[in-house]
Length: 359
Image (cartoon, rainbow, N blue to C red; front, side, top):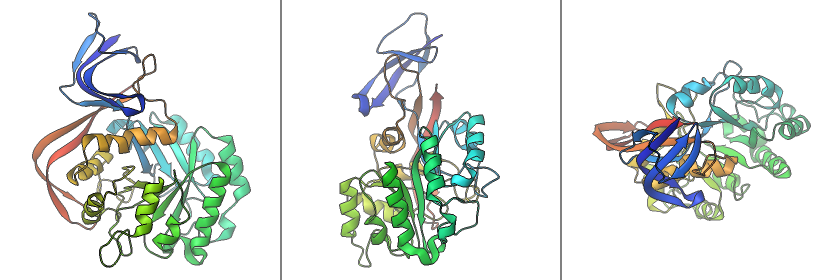
């Protein structure tokens, strides 16, 4: 069966595509751009954007074993999100159980595996005890599943690292570097200090919850952007939104954007404790960043283009490739109130809708 998507904004800068046009697909395979077929079903996208499929780079979807875990497909393909990255729910001890859930899901799942062997199945202090870290076992698991495990997750908060402080974060980064993997580091309440964490990171690593409104974030006490924050951003450390339950501030985000610090990645950090209470979807998070002033292309870069490159996904607008695409609508709406993690409000007249997942 042939389907011709007309009047689309086609966007895939990784393959030099940024144009208004039409896309022809037959039996799930991309046949051509601005080609026509008389026997094709016509779908008029009316100016909506057609791009590589959406990725949420930070969720928790390890059901039952972790008390944070959500159903993969409920926050994935059911919401037209093609790929989810489970960020540290599992360590090496329980990886087989997570892989079994992945096997049964329609959503594509990748993993940033926890440096701790117990992941988030052991309370809130997985990095506070060296006995919970087994690099030999973790190395074996990472080498066994290179197609799924794409990085190492570390939580750099006082309540997680305990007396081990920054040393366990440095150890986790050194381990990841040995294996040629990036780290994703959660930042929150000190210690460790933000500067200590950033000094561990290099190009391609991810710092998540970058726009949190907690004390001692990316701005100093006088409201100035910390020099090391800008330095690491320019070096290529990836700054991820990681909205979560308590990790996104409109004020911090808007000020950072004015300073030239735009999010490299936009993720939800959806989990059982915030889902449907403080946060409903990745598209809601993207709508908040739209309200903060990011353009359509900047938003798509952060939820589609950069994640695809980071994870090695083959989901571009390439002729003769299997279609793995998202339809995104940036639309005017009735005035609505959006809230950040502190309850601060913005009145918004535009929203982002994930319209469809084409595979």
